Image 1 (cartoon, rainbow, N blue to C red):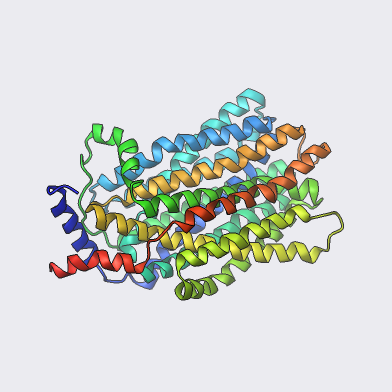
Image 2: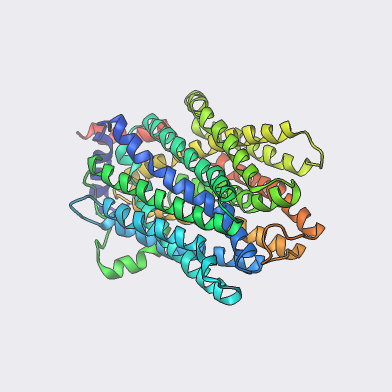
Length: 478
Protein backbone atom coordinates (compact mmCIF):
# COMPACT_ATOMS: atom_id res chain seq x y z
CA UNK A 1 0.00 0.00 0.00
CA UNK A 2 1.36 3.47 -0.91
CA UNK A 3 2.02 6.18 1.71
CA UNK A 4 -0.75 8.29 0.18
CA UNK A 5 -3.25 5.46 0.56
CA UNK A 6 -2.23 4.58 4.12
CA UNK A 7 -4.09 7.45 5.91
CA UNK A 8 -7.31 6.54 4.11
CA UNK A 9 -6.89 2.92 5.06
CA UNK A 10 -6.32 3.84 8.69
CA UNK A 11 -9.40 6.07 8.70
CA UNK A 12 -11.46 3.27 7.21
CA UNK A 13 -10.20 0.85 9.85
CA UNK A 14 -11.03 3.27 12.64
CA UNK A 15 -14.59 3.73 11.41
CA UNK A 16 -15.13 0.04 10.91
CA UNK A 17 -13.54 -0.85 14.21
CA UNK A 18 -15.37 1.77 16.32
CA UNK A 19 -18.92 1.04 15.12
CA UNK A 20 -20.38 -1.50 17.51
CA UNK A 21 -23.91 -0.14 18.24
CA UNK A 22 -26.39 -2.94 17.56
CA UNK A 23 -29.45 -2.55 15.37
CA UNK A 24 -32.72 -3.49 17.05
CA UNK A 25 -34.33 -6.88 16.56
CA UNK A 26 -37.39 -5.45 14.77
CA UNK A 27 -35.22 -3.56 12.28
CA UNK A 28 -33.06 -6.62 11.63
CA UNK A 29 -36.13 -8.73 10.94
CA UNK A 30 -37.68 -6.08 8.70
CA UNK A 31 -34.50 -5.93 6.63
CA UNK A 32 -34.20 -9.72 6.49
CA UNK A 33 -37.79 -10.08 5.27
CA UNK A 34 -36.70 -8.83 1.86
CA UNK A 35 -35.19 -12.25 1.27
CA UNK A 36 -38.71 -13.71 1.19
CA UNK A 37 -39.41 -11.77 -2.00
CA UNK A 38 -36.10 -12.47 -3.72
CA UNK A 39 -36.17 -16.13 -2.64
CA UNK A 40 -39.70 -16.65 -3.96
CA UNK A 41 -39.01 -15.06 -7.33
CA UNK A 42 -35.57 -16.64 -7.77
CA UNK A 43 -36.87 -20.13 -7.09
CA UNK A 44 -40.08 -19.81 -9.11
CA UNK A 45 -38.12 -18.43 -12.07
CA UNK A 46 -35.43 -21.10 -11.78
CA UNK A 47 -38.08 -23.81 -11.41
CA UNK A 48 -40.40 -22.82 -14.25
CA UNK A 49 -38.73 -20.46 -16.77
CA UNK A 50 -37.24 -23.22 -18.93
CA UNK A 51 -40.37 -25.38 -18.57
CA UNK A 52 -42.77 -22.56 -19.57
CA UNK A 53 -40.70 -21.62 -22.61
CA UNK A 54 -40.51 -25.19 -23.91
CA UNK A 55 -44.06 -26.25 -22.99
CA UNK A 56 -46.17 -23.19 -23.91
CA UNK A 57 -44.07 -20.88 -26.10
CA UNK A 58 -42.71 -23.53 -28.47
CA UNK A 59 -39.07 -22.60 -27.85
CA UNK A 60 -36.52 -25.40 -28.22
CA UNK A 61 -34.80 -26.42 -24.95
CA UNK A 62 -31.32 -25.45 -26.17
CA UNK A 63 -32.54 -22.00 -27.27
CA UNK A 64 -34.52 -21.53 -24.05
CA UNK A 65 -31.47 -22.40 -21.96
CA UNK A 66 -29.36 -20.04 -24.05
CA UNK A 67 -31.85 -17.20 -23.54
CA UNK A 68 -31.55 -17.63 -19.78
CA UNK A 69 -27.75 -17.74 -20.05
CA UNK A 70 -27.64 -14.56 -22.17
CA UNK A 71 -29.78 -12.72 -19.63
CA UNK A 72 -27.39 -13.73 -16.87
CA UNK A 73 -24.25 -12.84 -18.81
CA UNK A 74 -25.79 -9.42 -19.33
CA UNK A 75 -25.65 -9.15 -15.54
CA UNK A 76 -21.89 -9.36 -15.83
CA UNK A 77 -21.98 -5.81 -17.12
CA UNK A 78 -24.68 -4.25 -14.98
CA UNK A 79 -24.11 -5.89 -11.58
CA UNK A 80 -20.71 -4.35 -10.76
CA UNK A 81 -21.93 -1.09 -12.32
CA UNK A 82 -24.96 -0.97 -10.02
CA UNK A 83 -22.74 -1.87 -7.07
CA UNK A 84 -20.26 0.89 -7.90
CA UNK A 85 -23.11 3.37 -8.36
CA UNK A 86 -24.60 2.53 -4.95
CA UNK A 87 -21.16 2.90 -3.31
CA UNK A 88 -20.80 6.36 -4.86
CA UNK A 89 -24.37 7.54 -4.24
CA UNK A 90 -24.78 10.32 -1.70
CA UNK A 91 -28.51 10.75 -1.06
CA UNK A 92 -30.53 12.05 1.88
CA UNK A 93 -31.99 8.51 2.16
CA UNK A 94 -28.53 6.98 2.30
CA UNK A 95 -26.59 5.25 -0.49
CA UNK A 96 -28.82 2.17 -0.86
CA UNK A 97 -32.51 2.98 -0.24
CA UNK A 98 -33.36 4.67 -3.54
CA UNK A 99 -32.37 1.49 -5.37
CA UNK A 100 -34.61 -0.61 -3.14
CA UNK A 101 -37.58 1.51 -4.26
CA UNK A 102 -36.83 1.33 -7.99
CA UNK A 103 -35.98 -2.36 -7.87
CA UNK A 104 -39.11 -3.30 -5.91
CA UNK A 105 -41.49 -1.97 -8.55
CA UNK A 106 -39.61 -3.20 -11.62
CA UNK A 107 -38.95 -6.65 -10.15
CA UNK A 108 -42.57 -7.51 -9.49
CA UNK A 109 -43.77 -6.14 -12.83
CA UNK A 110 -41.19 -7.95 -14.99
CA UNK A 111 -41.78 -11.28 -13.24
CA UNK A 112 -45.54 -11.07 -13.75
CA UNK A 113 -45.19 -10.10 -17.42
CA UNK A 114 -42.84 -13.00 -18.21
CA UNK A 115 -45.30 -15.62 -16.97
CA UNK A 116 -48.15 -13.96 -18.88
CA UNK A 117 -46.36 -14.06 -22.25
CA UNK A 118 -48.40 -17.04 -23.42
CA UNK A 119 -51.54 -14.84 -23.33
CA UNK A 120 -50.18 -12.97 -26.35
CA UNK A 121 -50.25 -16.12 -28.49
CA UNK A 122 -46.59 -15.75 -29.48
CA UNK A 123 -44.67 -18.76 -30.79
CA UNK A 124 -41.21 -19.53 -32.15
CA UNK A 125 -38.87 -16.60 -32.84
CA UNK A 126 -41.38 -13.93 -31.73
CA UNK A 127 -41.84 -15.71 -28.40
CA UNK A 128 -38.07 -16.10 -28.02
CA UNK A 129 -37.52 -12.37 -28.65
CA UNK A 130 -40.21 -11.36 -26.13
CA UNK A 131 -38.93 -13.82 -23.51
CA UNK A 132 -35.38 -12.48 -23.92
CA UNK A 133 -36.52 -8.87 -23.50
CA UNK A 134 -38.49 -9.63 -20.35
CA UNK A 135 -35.73 -11.72 -18.81
CA UNK A 136 -33.29 -8.86 -19.41
CA UNK A 137 -35.70 -6.48 -17.67
CA UNK A 138 -36.18 -8.94 -14.82
CA UNK A 139 -32.40 -9.37 -14.42
CA UNK A 140 -31.93 -5.60 -14.29
CA UNK A 141 -34.65 -5.15 -11.67
CA UNK A 142 -33.35 -8.07 -9.59
CA UNK A 143 -29.88 -6.51 -9.54
CA UNK A 144 -31.12 -3.00 -8.73
CA UNK A 145 -32.85 -4.32 -5.61
CA UNK A 146 -30.55 -7.14 -4.52
CA UNK A 147 -27.10 -5.57 -4.85
CA UNK A 148 -27.67 -2.60 -2.50
CA UNK A 149 -29.66 -4.93 -0.23
CA UNK A 150 -26.72 -7.33 0.11
CA UNK A 151 -24.32 -4.45 0.78
CA UNK A 152 -26.12 -3.42 3.99
CA UNK A 153 -25.23 -6.20 6.55
CA UNK A 154 -21.77 -4.88 7.57
CA UNK A 155 -23.50 -1.74 8.89
CA UNK A 156 -26.49 -3.57 10.39
CA UNK A 157 -24.39 -6.19 12.22
CA UNK A 158 -20.76 -5.06 12.69
CA UNK A 159 -19.74 -8.01 14.88
CA UNK A 160 -18.41 -11.36 13.61
CA UNK A 161 -20.97 -13.48 15.51
CA UNK A 162 -23.73 -10.89 15.15
CA UNK A 163 -23.62 -11.47 11.41
CA UNK A 164 -24.43 -15.12 11.85
CA UNK A 165 -27.47 -14.09 13.90
CA UNK A 166 -28.58 -11.51 11.32
CA UNK A 167 -28.09 -13.96 8.48
CA UNK A 168 -30.05 -16.63 10.33
CA UNK A 169 -33.03 -14.24 10.13
CA UNK A 170 -32.35 -13.75 6.46
CA UNK A 171 -32.10 -17.50 5.89
CA UNK A 172 -35.44 -17.97 7.66
CA UNK A 173 -37.18 -15.53 5.31
CA UNK A 174 -35.26 -16.86 2.34
CA UNK A 175 -36.51 -20.36 3.09
CA UNK A 176 -40.03 -19.03 3.53
CA UNK A 177 -39.61 -17.46 0.09
CA UNK A 178 -38.28 -20.74 -1.27
CA UNK A 179 -41.44 -22.37 0.08
CA UNK A 180 -43.60 -19.77 -1.66
CA UNK A 181 -41.67 -20.03 -4.93
CA UNK A 182 -41.11 -23.78 -5.11
CA UNK A 183 -44.04 -25.16 -3.08
CA UNK A 184 -46.75 -22.48 -3.13
CA UNK A 185 -46.26 -21.62 -6.80
CA UNK A 186 -46.79 -25.22 -8.06
CA UNK A 187 -49.85 -25.57 -5.82
CA UNK A 188 -51.29 -22.36 -7.27
CA UNK A 189 -50.60 -23.54 -10.82
CA UNK A 190 -52.37 -26.82 -10.09
CA UNK A 191 -55.38 -25.14 -8.47
CA UNK A 192 -56.30 -22.68 -11.23
CA UNK A 193 -57.83 -23.85 -14.51
CA UNK A 194 -55.52 -25.23 -17.17
CA UNK A 195 -51.73 -25.40 -16.61
CA UNK A 196 -51.27 -22.38 -18.88
CA UNK A 197 -53.81 -20.33 -16.90
CA UNK A 198 -52.22 -21.50 -13.68
CA UNK A 199 -48.80 -20.20 -14.66
CA UNK A 200 -50.27 -16.82 -15.58
CA UNK A 201 -52.07 -16.53 -12.24
CA UNK A 202 -48.99 -17.65 -10.35
CA UNK A 203 -46.79 -15.07 -12.09
CA UNK A 204 -49.21 -12.25 -11.34
CA UNK A 205 -49.74 -13.21 -7.70
CA UNK A 206 -46.06 -13.72 -6.88
CA UNK A 207 -45.02 -10.59 -8.76
CA UNK A 208 -47.46 -8.36 -6.86
CA UNK A 209 -46.66 -9.95 -3.49
CA UNK A 210 -42.89 -9.61 -4.00
CA UNK A 211 -43.17 -5.96 -5.03
CA UNK A 212 -45.24 -5.20 -1.93
CA UNK A 213 -42.79 -6.87 0.43
CA UNK A 214 -39.79 -5.18 -1.19
CA UNK A 215 -41.52 -1.82 -0.64
CA UNK A 216 -41.90 -2.69 3.07
CA UNK A 217 -38.14 -3.31 3.20
CA UNK A 218 -37.58 0.06 1.53
CA UNK A 219 -39.69 1.80 4.18
CA UNK A 220 -38.04 -0.09 7.03
CA UNK A 221 -34.54 0.76 5.75
CA UNK A 222 -35.15 4.37 6.82
CA UNK A 223 -34.42 3.23 10.41
CA UNK A 224 -31.13 1.52 9.57
CA UNK A 225 -27.71 3.17 10.06
CA UNK A 226 -25.97 4.77 7.09
CA UNK A 227 -22.50 5.60 8.46
CA UNK A 228 -20.16 7.74 6.44
CA UNK A 229 -17.40 5.88 4.68
CA UNK A 230 -14.65 6.87 2.27
CA UNK A 231 -16.00 7.13 -1.25
CA UNK A 232 -14.34 5.07 -3.99
CA UNK A 233 -12.11 7.04 -6.37
CA UNK A 234 -13.93 9.04 -9.01
CA UNK A 235 -17.19 9.72 -7.17
CA UNK A 236 -20.10 9.89 -9.64
CA UNK A 237 -17.86 10.87 -12.54
CA UNK A 238 -19.29 9.25 -15.69
CA UNK A 239 -15.93 7.95 -16.89
CA UNK A 240 -15.19 6.37 -13.51
CA UNK A 241 -18.58 4.65 -13.51
CA UNK A 242 -18.17 3.30 -17.04
CA UNK A 243 -14.83 1.65 -16.28
CA UNK A 244 -15.80 0.62 -12.74
CA UNK A 245 -17.31 -2.77 -13.73
CA UNK A 246 -13.84 -3.77 -14.86
CA UNK A 247 -11.51 -1.95 -12.47
CA UNK A 248 -13.56 -2.41 -9.31
CA UNK A 249 -14.18 -6.08 -10.01
CA UNK A 250 -10.47 -6.64 -10.43
CA UNK A 251 -9.72 -4.78 -7.21
CA UNK A 252 -12.20 -6.68 -5.04
CA UNK A 253 -11.06 -9.98 -6.53
CA UNK A 254 -7.63 -9.20 -5.08
CA UNK A 255 -9.38 -9.90 -1.76
CA UNK A 256 -8.55 -13.62 -1.48
CA UNK A 257 -11.30 -14.58 1.03
CA UNK A 258 -13.93 -12.87 -1.11
CA UNK A 259 -12.60 -14.46 -4.30
CA UNK A 260 -12.66 -17.96 -2.85
CA UNK A 261 -16.10 -17.52 -1.26
CA UNK A 262 -17.49 -16.20 -4.54
CA UNK A 263 -16.23 -19.21 -6.48
CA UNK A 264 -17.67 -21.56 -3.84
CA UNK A 265 -20.99 -19.74 -4.11
CA UNK A 266 -20.89 -20.15 -7.90
CA UNK A 267 -20.67 -23.92 -7.49
CA UNK A 268 -23.31 -24.01 -4.77
CA UNK A 269 -25.88 -22.00 -6.73
CA UNK A 270 -25.18 -23.98 -9.89
CA UNK A 271 -26.30 -26.99 -7.85
CA UNK A 272 -29.58 -25.32 -6.98
CA UNK A 273 -30.32 -23.97 -10.45
CA UNK A 274 -29.64 -27.33 -12.11
CA UNK A 275 -31.94 -29.16 -9.70
CA UNK A 276 -34.71 -26.58 -10.00
CA UNK A 277 -34.60 -26.48 -13.80
CA UNK A 278 -34.87 -30.28 -13.92
CA UNK A 279 -37.54 -30.67 -11.25
CA UNK A 280 -40.72 -30.10 -13.32
CA UNK A 281 -39.50 -32.63 -15.89
CA UNK A 282 -38.34 -35.07 -13.20
CA UNK A 283 -41.60 -35.10 -11.26
CA UNK A 284 -43.76 -35.24 -14.37
CA UNK A 285 -41.79 -37.52 -16.70
CA UNK A 286 -39.69 -39.75 -14.42
CA UNK A 287 -41.59 -39.95 -11.14
CA UNK A 288 -45.01 -39.70 -12.81
CA UNK A 289 -46.29 -37.21 -10.21
CA UNK A 290 -48.25 -34.00 -10.76
CA UNK A 291 -47.26 -30.37 -10.30
CA UNK A 292 -48.85 -30.30 -6.84
CA UNK A 293 -46.40 -32.97 -5.66
CA UNK A 294 -43.54 -30.62 -6.52
CA UNK A 295 -45.07 -28.21 -4.02
CA UNK A 296 -45.39 -30.93 -1.38
CA UNK A 297 -41.77 -31.99 -1.86
CA UNK A 298 -40.38 -28.47 -1.61
CA UNK A 299 -42.71 -27.66 1.25
CA UNK A 300 -41.13 -30.48 3.26
CA UNK A 301 -37.70 -29.40 1.97
CA UNK A 302 -38.26 -25.83 3.23
CA UNK A 303 -39.78 -26.83 6.58
CA UNK A 304 -36.79 -29.07 7.27
CA UNK A 305 -34.50 -26.19 6.37
CA UNK A 306 -36.27 -23.70 8.63
CA UNK A 307 -36.27 -26.09 11.58
CA UNK A 308 -32.57 -26.79 11.08
CA UNK A 309 -31.45 -23.13 11.26
CA UNK A 310 -30.97 -23.06 15.08
CA UNK A 311 -28.99 -26.30 14.83
CA UNK A 312 -26.66 -24.89 12.19
CA UNK A 313 -26.20 -21.68 14.19
CA UNK A 314 -25.05 -23.80 17.15
CA UNK A 315 -22.79 -25.95 14.97
CA UNK A 316 -21.21 -22.87 13.36
CA UNK A 317 -20.57 -21.30 16.78
CA UNK A 318 -19.05 -24.55 18.03
CA UNK A 319 -16.94 -25.62 15.04
CA UNK A 320 -16.58 -22.54 12.83
CA UNK A 321 -18.15 -21.30 9.60
CA UNK A 322 -15.65 -22.79 7.17
CA UNK A 323 -15.43 -26.20 8.85
CA UNK A 324 -19.23 -26.54 9.02
CA UNK A 325 -19.53 -25.45 5.39
CA UNK A 326 -17.08 -28.14 4.21
CA UNK A 327 -18.94 -30.98 5.91
CA UNK A 328 -22.35 -29.77 4.76
CA UNK A 329 -21.24 -29.54 1.12
CA UNK A 330 -20.22 -33.21 1.23
CA UNK A 331 -23.55 -34.22 2.77
CA UNK A 332 -25.50 -32.03 0.32
CA UNK A 333 -23.75 -33.58 -2.69
CA UNK A 334 -24.26 -37.11 -1.40
CA UNK A 335 -27.97 -36.48 -0.83
CA UNK A 336 -28.44 -35.20 -4.38
CA UNK A 337 -26.44 -38.05 -5.88
CA UNK A 338 -28.84 -40.51 -4.23
CA UNK A 339 -31.50 -39.55 -6.81
CA UNK A 340 -29.43 -41.44 -9.40
CA UNK A 341 -30.24 -44.64 -7.52
CA UNK A 342 -34.00 -44.06 -7.80
CA UNK A 343 -35.91 -46.88 -9.51
CA UNK A 344 -39.64 -47.30 -10.28
CA UNK A 345 -41.54 -48.68 -7.32
CA UNK A 346 -39.23 -47.17 -4.72
CA UNK A 347 -40.98 -46.62 -1.33
CA UNK A 348 -42.45 -43.14 -1.01
CA UNK A 349 -40.85 -42.58 2.39
CA UNK A 350 -37.50 -42.31 0.60
CA UNK A 351 -38.86 -39.34 -1.36
CA UNK A 352 -39.79 -37.66 1.92
CA UNK A 353 -36.47 -38.57 3.55
CA UNK A 354 -34.56 -36.98 0.66
CA UNK A 355 -36.67 -33.81 0.98
CA UNK A 356 -35.86 -33.50 4.69
CA UNK A 357 -32.15 -34.27 4.50
CA UNK A 358 -31.37 -32.35 1.32
CA UNK A 359 -33.41 -29.39 2.61
CA UNK A 360 -31.51 -29.32 5.91
CA UNK A 361 -28.07 -29.69 4.29
CA UNK A 362 -28.86 -27.06 1.64
CA UNK A 363 -29.97 -24.60 4.32
CA UNK A 364 -26.78 -25.14 6.30
CA UNK A 365 -24.58 -24.37 3.29
CA UNK A 366 -26.64 -21.26 2.58
CA UNK A 367 -26.32 -19.95 6.14
CA UNK A 368 -22.55 -20.51 6.12
CA UNK A 369 -22.11 -18.63 2.84
CA UNK A 370 -24.28 -15.69 3.91
CA UNK A 371 -22.58 -15.42 7.30
CA UNK A 372 -19.14 -15.36 5.65
CA UNK A 373 -19.90 -12.71 3.01
CA UNK A 374 -20.03 -9.71 5.44
CA UNK A 375 -16.75 -10.95 6.95
CA UNK A 376 -15.08 -10.62 3.55
CA UNK A 377 -16.59 -7.13 3.20
CA UNK A 378 -15.18 -6.02 6.54
CA UNK A 379 -11.83 -7.56 5.65
CA UNK A 380 -11.83 -5.53 2.43
CA UNK A 381 -12.77 -2.30 4.23
CA UNK A 382 -10.07 -2.78 6.87
CA UNK A 383 -7.42 -3.66 4.30
CA UNK A 384 -8.21 -1.01 1.68
CA UNK A 385 -9.72 1.85 3.67
CA UNK A 386 -12.51 2.09 1.09
CA UNK A 387 -16.22 1.28 1.26
CA UNK A 388 -16.68 -1.19 -1.61
CA UNK A 389 -19.56 -3.27 -0.26
CA UNK A 390 -21.75 -2.35 -3.23
CA UNK A 391 -19.16 -3.53 -5.73
CA UNK A 392 -18.66 -6.75 -3.78
CA UNK A 393 -22.37 -7.47 -3.57
CA UNK A 394 -22.57 -6.67 -7.30
CA UNK A 395 -19.94 -9.27 -8.07
CA UNK A 396 -21.61 -11.73 -5.70
CA UNK A 397 -24.99 -11.14 -7.35
CA UNK A 398 -23.46 -11.52 -10.80
CA UNK A 399 -22.08 -14.90 -9.75
CA UNK A 400 -25.51 -15.80 -8.36
CA UNK A 401 -27.11 -14.93 -11.69
CA UNK A 402 -24.50 -16.78 -13.76
CA UNK A 403 -24.94 -19.84 -11.57
CA UNK A 404 -28.69 -19.46 -11.96
CA UNK A 405 -28.23 -19.63 -15.73
CA UNK A 406 -25.80 -22.54 -15.75
CA UNK A 407 -28.45 -24.95 -14.53
CA UNK A 408 -31.10 -24.21 -17.20
CA UNK A 409 -28.39 -24.04 -19.87
CA UNK A 410 -26.97 -27.46 -18.94
CA UNK A 411 -30.45 -28.96 -18.59
CA UNK A 412 -31.49 -27.43 -21.90
CA UNK A 413 -28.55 -29.07 -23.65
CA UNK A 414 -29.31 -32.41 -21.99
CA UNK A 415 -32.95 -32.23 -23.07
CA UNK A 416 -32.03 -31.14 -26.59
CA UNK A 417 -29.66 -34.09 -26.88
CA UNK A 418 -32.40 -36.42 -25.67
CA UNK A 419 -34.89 -35.08 -28.22
CA UNK A 420 -37.44 -33.29 -26.00
CA UNK A 421 -40.82 -32.74 -27.67
CA UNK A 422 -41.75 -29.04 -27.26
CA UNK A 423 -44.85 -26.87 -27.58
CA UNK A 424 -47.33 -29.65 -26.75
CA UNK A 425 -47.83 -29.01 -23.03
CA UNK A 426 -46.53 -30.92 -20.01
CA UNK A 427 -48.32 -34.17 -20.93
CA UNK A 428 -46.46 -34.80 -24.21
CA UNK A 429 -44.91 -38.28 -24.44
CA UNK A 430 -41.11 -38.03 -24.35
CA UNK A 431 -38.41 -40.44 -25.61
CA UNK A 432 -36.45 -42.58 -23.07
CA UNK A 433 -33.28 -40.53 -23.67
CA UNK A 434 -35.04 -37.49 -22.23
CA UNK A 435 -35.95 -39.40 -19.07
CA UNK A 436 -32.33 -40.48 -18.61
CA UNK A 437 -31.08 -36.92 -19.13
CA UNK A 438 -33.53 -35.62 -16.55
CA UNK A 439 -32.37 -38.13 -13.93
CA UNK A 440 -28.74 -37.14 -14.50
CA UNK A 441 -29.76 -33.49 -14.15
CA UNK A 442 -31.23 -33.89 -10.66
CA UNK A 443 -28.51 -36.15 -9.27
CA UNK A 444 -24.96 -36.53 -10.53
CA UNK A 445 -24.60 -33.20 -12.34
CA UNK A 446 -25.41 -31.06 -9.26
CA UNK A 447 -23.41 -33.41 -7.01
CA UNK A 448 -20.31 -32.73 -9.13
CA UNK A 449 -20.73 -28.98 -8.52
CA UNK A 450 -20.92 -29.62 -4.75
CA UNK A 451 -17.69 -31.57 -4.71
CA UNK A 452 -15.94 -29.06 -7.01
CA UNK A 453 -16.44 -26.38 -4.32
CA UNK A 454 -14.53 -28.31 -1.64
CA UNK A 455 -10.90 -27.53 -2.66
CA UNK A 456 -11.81 -23.85 -3.05
CA UNK A 457 -13.38 -23.65 0.40
CA UNK A 458 -10.44 -25.55 1.93
CA UNK A 459 -8.18 -22.63 0.99
CA UNK A 460 -10.42 -20.04 2.72
CA UNK A 461 -8.74 -18.86 5.96
CA UNK A 462 -10.59 -15.72 7.16
CA UNK A 463 -11.87 -16.06 10.75
CA UNK A 464 -12.65 -13.90 13.78
CA UNK A 465 -9.03 -13.90 14.94
CA UNK A 466 -7.84 -12.37 11.66
CA UNK A 467 -10.47 -9.63 11.77
CA UNK A 468 -9.72 -8.85 15.42
CA UNK A 469 -6.02 -8.55 14.63
CA UNK A 470 -6.77 -6.10 11.80
CA UNK A 471 -8.94 -3.95 14.10
CA UNK A 472 -6.42 -3.73 16.94
CA UNK A 473 -4.04 -1.19 15.34
CA UNK A 474 -6.97 1.16 14.78
CA UNK A 475 -7.99 0.87 18.42
CA UNK A 476 -4.41 1.43 19.58
CA UNK A 477 -4.17 4.61 17.52
CA UNK A 478 -7.24 5.95 19.27
